[in-house]
Length: 168
Image (cartoon, rainbow, N blue to C red):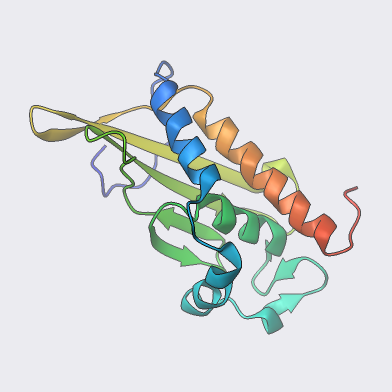
């Protein structure tokens, strides 16, 4: 797979977890950025308008607004390559953890449904390592996708609860 190709879901199954654990910890820290200060510009740039919500938890176009916002919040430490609120697709650009000069990550998140359910979210993680001056595709740790998916779902549920809805 080349860095620009679409995800195929055929990633090998055995990988290291430590580098990605550091990536998740860095994302959880968030540095000195105030997430609330990022909400309006990010929403404006991606075409998300608060008036576009249909019902309690759906964006116009059929994706769950809490899953969408949860994915944006969870992945906000990475640069976004594109985000389509109507189609429910978030693609990050390559992210290189500050502590590592020889690996980088890219994530694709797909919101597939209007309901806040685990099967309404699909996450693909891509990892490359530098070998001989070239970036080579390699797979992330086995639990990387499930860890990111869990974080997105947790954030979406938190947003829903904060908005006065019970989690059924």
